[in-house]
Image 1 (cartoon, protein in one colour):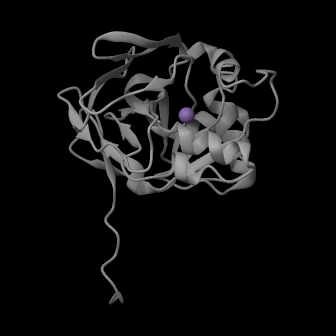
Image 2: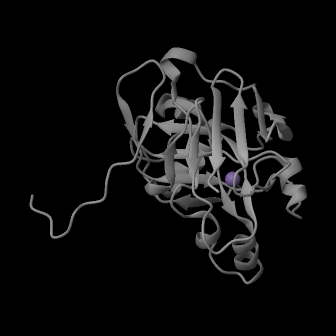
Length: 232
Ligand code: MN
């Protein structure tokens, strides 16, 4: 195949203990999946159906414990961190049952759903799409994937984020309103899932702004930690 223009690159994540890279397809993000975060966003955390938004593959940045640097994005004065459990889909499918959902998981990682909060809330309040607030390059730093084949399927684990060594977010993934299996099952009713798809499962309370030069350290017990610096 000869392309009319240079094709986009394949964005990849690293895989713990493996030399192969995981190619990122689509990134689906669950909104308001921890009750305390729903409350801080001014919403009732009642268990209504989950909702999703998306980021492009170019949002994915392979992060690691040694530390990476991301750009401070344009057109915002309120650049927020959201620490999240990340799920990577290894086997696609449609109308996946909750019982079989975890068989479709390749692995898990620590990730950040970086958000231009001012643009997101402005769009939300005007009934407009969230894209400018959520869907931009480098808005999803994600650590190495830990294969389900190696670690199983975590259902309880501390999840935390510090900024410049001060605690910002601290919870447990057992507080997810919609479990990983439920989110996969629900999403697969709307869209045929494909290998390479990523699901970011939502953030606990404590979201707040970072500034140029700040260093974020995100961790989930069993999945290691990532260090992400915001460029000056
Ligand atoms: Mn999020």
